[in-house]
Image (cartoon, rainbow, N blue to C red; front, side, top):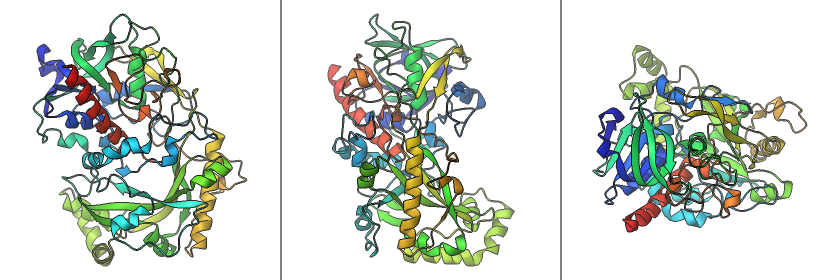
Length: 534
């Protein structure tokens, strides 16, 4: 792929078969899948190769709802590679339950099911830097890992085993996949990535059913015009509805918004520590519910073992989907962090001193990794029991526009994120079950914080997890959402949406693996639809 600054691109180059707005995991996956397909692809990235305050300022928004962990800006990194610039690399799959309509979760249910995504998961795994695209999140992990299943199992009526996989960057084994770093190494002569290019308006025909051009601005705010046969919005759970709502020259309510659905159903994951455990008492429990290193078809990869609420108890007690895991919090002088810095060539004398002073721990860790294939034993400050809970869809939790504009003249977003008591009840119940199960299995169990107690009246000290979701939700009926099962905006013939904004529900799973699988699926659809039309 070729990368150019907007100012260096000639007007005649701003024409493509497919224009992708956004260069995060969704956008770059679509571009990579369409490479060498004879389709000309333009990728527009608002930021540059490096992060800048000027670009990130374009993400400023007015927060009028629940407190968010990032009050000044949403997690929508304006940089080549998008959110992969700052993500943690945790990959997980939605459960089969998440796709179904659940009577106790109003607004739940996808128009597609897990079998519709299954064929695309192996390719998604390659894009995202993991070893397996599916089959690793439950007891199937033990067979994939070539390990015996533990003799003492979780009570399946209450909790089930759940595994996350950690992405690994092909150029840096100590980091997760950073999509932007690999753009130029891909052989894709028909793909042009333009940085410093912010889409500010989608121009359509008079009926608002067909995108004819995109207005794009850069360091020089003079608008440039992009023409494409198909357009894909991949700018995140806040950026996607913002651009649809702001594109109102033909339709005053914005594009795809005839049924007042754009921007509604804003969800996230509420996440945080709910308890803690002293490191001295944790060796046995972290051996079982900790990290595992597994040889996969794509090299060695790290998996994390946690627990999730069983579907039966969710249905019986009206609970949302929720998962918990043990998170090691390294001490300030953890030698493994120093070793990683030294191996990356970024270490200093302090790192060398820390490594030498803890040579015994390093030797034990190397032995543990080589012989037991488990995570490295860090020098720890503490071990936290953390949770991640889904939110039920709420049409009043939403993104709208303010009356003020950013420096490019685009209206800024107004975010009214809502939280609900059902999430609090779920977290308290799941945390209590986890502690009881750990104790039943003979492990030292974490101590829950006071505000997690079942009878506590204190607010849950959880925040969003920078996973804005649901604001252009997928639906079979245009009255219930923004895009159809192929991610095509209802009532339009060439405008598509990619990313977590199309999720009707979130589950408890980190969204990036599902985002990338949907992007692969959309790329196949575009290859057929646009290629055939041409």
